Amino acid sequence: MMGALAVLIAIALVIKSGGGAASRMAEQMLARQNVVAGTLTYEKINAGFAGDVEIRNLVWKAPNGDVKMEMPLATASVNFFDALRKGAGVGAVTNIVFNRPKFYGVYEEGQGLDLLNLLKLAGQENAQEVGKKPEQPDNPTGFRGLIEVKDGELDLVSNGKKVRLDKINSQMAFKQYPLLRASATGNKEKCDLVLNMDYENGSARVTGEAKNAPVPDVLAMYPDMKHIKVTDGVVPTVKIAASKDRGGWHIRLDGKPRNMAGEFFGLPFTDGEGTFTADRDMAELQTVQANVKGMPVTLQGTIKSGRGTPLPPVFDLSFSANNFKTQALSKGLYLDDASVVFSGKVTGTAVEPKIEGTFSCNYLYAAPLQMNSLHGNYVWNAGKLVLHKAEAMSAGAKVTLDGFLIPAAGDYQFSLVGNNLDAAQMTDNRITGVLRMKARVAGTDRADSAAGNGAFALENGRYYHTEGNLRSEEVRYMEGNIVILNGQFGTKDAVMKLGRNKYSIAVAAGDKDAAEIRIGKKLSSSLF
Image 1: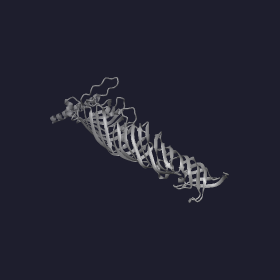
Image 2 (image 1 turned 60 degrees about the vertical axis):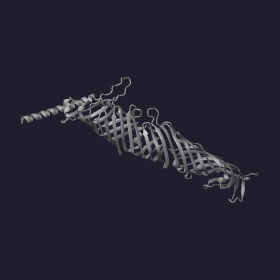
Image 3 (image 1 turned 120 degrees about the vertical axis):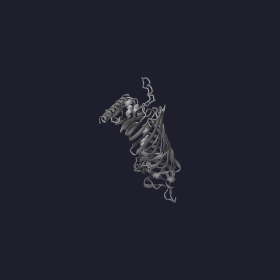
Image 4 (image 1 turned 135 degrees about the horizontal axis):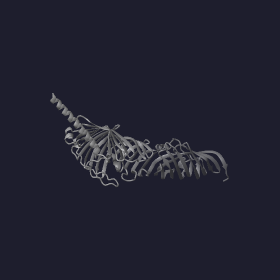
């Protein structure tokens, strides 16, 4: 009986001694740790009967004082007899579990992810600070166990954009040290992330994929592109390949985004889809298609991130559309349901972008002109698409156009000049002669908003009173002002001299084939 009691007392003393050794070992490990830059603080350490150590409310602060991790509980499993025999040491630890840790990371171009930069893995030389001597490589660790992260969170600020990952679970095995093998899973809303990593002597290789990744989160690795914004969309599968060498971290992403929405230089787009390949330096877009104001547009090219330079993102993009309705540009530009073909390029930087291109239209009707073979150039200037060298054929002569359109607002202002117009073509042979006209029109993104003014004149023609040309008179001159109101063409103070009589007239835009001349009262007569 006494012998059994003595054995029990001895076992209790051994357990107590072992727990105390494990606790002291944990305190020493935290005080002398060389795994992360900065400081580790904790509320208390408890040692269990089996030699397990619980560390409560562990906090990691970077050298600048920023909190990088907060954790309510970390558990270290200690080999009971190693802790007694070796007098404590990291080699006695078999397993470390981080329970519900919360990490705070910052990713910046040219600097990378601060959490990785603050790790001091064995064999890795620390970055030299200005005015300090280079540090020696960290001593190899004696740890040969497993580190686990359970139900963690990561709050990441990437180039000023916030991204949160939760349900992070990870394992890192030191069994084959210096080769470290790690795996991790995480979640962001409907996105699931899986990563695998091998790390040895300062070099790393990472592979993985993200399922249902939101496009805005993928773009978070790039700086703000200002005029190009993606607010919605998903990549069903993002293939991830990353590596680390003496040159730092390298990453490549591949995917096929779907259902993208956002803005492209003030124009809303939806239903975007395509293929991309991206690394930290450049993203290549391969035939991205989207609906801009309901019209199909194709985009392709590259965007350089500007990493490692003071430059913002650099564009080299081309775009095109084959059947873009004018009323999609502005509801005030119905123009008989005309369609425009255009192409262009986006170059320059996100801060100083440059857009230029060409456009054409086979036919459009802007009463009373029927225009064909419209074509020209355009440039983007402070939110305006400005026309250059735009011209069309109308009534057997060239018509020139200039002006601008504000795509984001739908506002526009255009001027039109035509000389040597064939009046017969415009009036279905009711008047012959050469007509000249000019007009200015402005409108908004509202149907029938067009308003403007102008003038027209004709000299030495002929007016036919009947369609069969049975009776006609000489037109000595015809002139007047053009008035455009609520999208309707009209005239003001218009007159026509037929022979020796001067009449007031009104010109109305009839059907698409002819303008109608309405003769009013006689104003005066002359002898000649």
